[in-house]
Image (cartoon, rainbow, N blue to C red; front, side, top):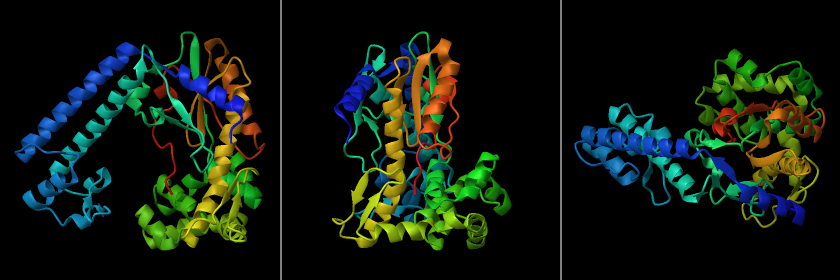
Amino acid sequence: MLTHEEITYLVKVGNRGLRVNRPVLEAATAEAINVLDKAQNALNQAAGRIVIAHSNDDVSSLLFVERGNKEPSAYGSRTKTGKVSLTVTSLQNISDPIAQLLIDVRKAQSQVKYFTIANKFRVGDRISYEFEHQKAATFRLYAKNPSVMSFPGDIRKCIVPDDGNTFVFADYDRQELCLMAYASMERKFFEERDAGLDIFSFLSESSDVPREKVKLAIYAYLYGAKLDSLVWKTGATGAQVQKFLGAFLTRYPELAEFPRRAIAKVTQNLTAVTIYGNGEMNGAGEPDYEKAVRRLVNFMVQGAGGMILRELIRQISQLDWMQFKVSGHDSVMVEVPTARAEEGKLKLRELMEGIIPGVLKATPITGKTWFDVWNGENETEEI
């Protein structure tokens, strides 16, 4: 739980909110609506009728009944009611040109939705918001009313610091992997990281699998996933997964033991403590034992990340010249006087790396819009 002082600080941050360049926001909103109109018209013309792009039923009818594409089960997962769930990812696997038109409309609809939210919550040149600090199982802070962290890049281009100020942003480099290596006492990992090795890029090049897929698979394995699951997640062959995963586990034998040790630890009494050393979760109330174990192992790492960010925000709140603005999965953005921008970068790095010295690394950057420092892509890990 947060202290009264911490809650008061977050309320103040949320009330002050994010400053908006109104002319830029208004122009971008109009352009988003224009793009949606053009995309919808192109889709309707190609289909020969009005298409309700957000309706799975209408899209299924268009693609699989009217246009004779393969059965829906080849592309989409099923909803609880048994209907096909056609996501953008599913549509990308359909060769019919109209599928791309559907994707264009859905993306444009999403843009307009977020611009509508931004304008709804804007008062003058500010968008205020709140922080959720009680419901998150991993202790992370989430902005809500509105969820500003969901704002896409085109809206972030409209978010600016106060006159005379600059944004400073930084995220932790491979935070989860570093925490697991720290818990496993895998010294070789830190030695190689500090020497400049990006293990994900190294394994990607040697296995001919994209870096993000390698990263996803390794994290999934360390959280307890099986080999067949990794093949499905990455789209790589079993041989490719075995090659890069085997190389990783051989290179870091202590880290390779993390899943087994973590599972053994939480199964003693179905309780987990974060790697950071504080924060506890009890899984006794979960009816699915295996699910409870997975949640507890996840909590050991994710909960540590949440506690680290909260400690970072607490330390930032003690500085009268640095304003906390928003935080992501393993990142933070602050605002400082432009005249102290370089000092702000150094200070933010000092605070972030000082929470667990020698374990966590961060490289702050500065910018004049939120988009300049943080475009909104790849902010969370989906395991």
